[in-house]
Amino acid sequence: DAGVIQSPRHEVTEMGQEVTLRCKPISGHDYLFWYRQTMMRGLELLIYFNNNVPIDDSGMPEDRFSAKMPNASFSTLKIQPSEPRDSAVYFCASSGQGTDTQYFGPGTRLTVL
Amino acid sequence: QKEVEQDPGPLSVPEGAIVSLNCTYSNSAFQYFMWYRQYSRKGPELLMYTYSSGNKEDGRFTAQVDKSSKYISLFIRDSQPSDSATYLCAMNKNSGYALNFGKGTSLLVTP
Image 1 (tube, rainbow over the protein chains, first blue to last red):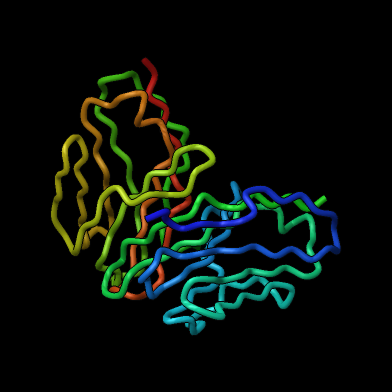
Image 2: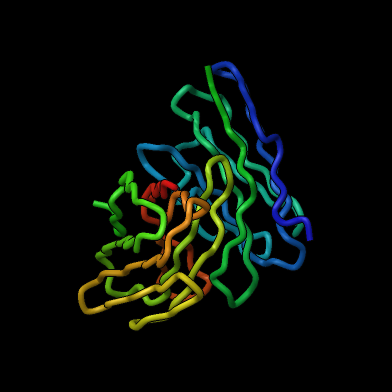
C-alpha cells in the first residue's frame, strides 16, 4: 500500500488566492482527518470524516476553510481567500474502523505571501 | 488551556542515555494513549499505543500511563542518533473519536 497520499507537497501562493489541498486515504479506511501544524499551536485537528460524512468541523478556523470528501478515496481542503496566517503544514491522516491508529500523509507545506 | 500539555524542549542527550518524555492532561475521560514520532519534514507515525493505566514495552521503548495523576511517559533506553525527532503524545476518550495531541517534544541524541 502506498500509504496516505497528499498533493501538492509544497504550495506557495499570494494572499487572496484560492488554495486546494488534496488527499487520498489508505484504501479501506473509514476515517479521514485534516490537521494543521504550526510551531506556535502544534498539531490542530481541523475536520474529520467517517464514511465520507463530516463528523466534527469545529476546528475549521473560519468560513474561508472548507473540506469535502466526495468518495472514499479522495478529499479536498480548500482555503478561499488565503491569508498569510494560513501558512502551515497541512496533514491528512486516515484510520480504519475500530482502531485509533492514524496513518499520516507527508503533508503539504503551504506558504501564503 | 489545552487539554494536553507537553514540554516542547528541545531535549539534548548523549547517545546511550535514557530519555524520559512526558505529557499531562486534564480530561479524565481519556483512556486511549499514544505516542507518535515525527521526523523533520515528515508526517507523524505511531510509535506506542496503550489503553488505560499501566506500562507497555516494545524493544527500547516503554510507555507508562498513570490515570490517577493524569500523566503519561515515554522512556527510551540506549538512545540512538536515529531517535532524534519530535515526539507527540496523543489521547482520546474512545475509539473513533478524534485524537488530542500535545505540541510535541523535540529530542536530539548526539553521537
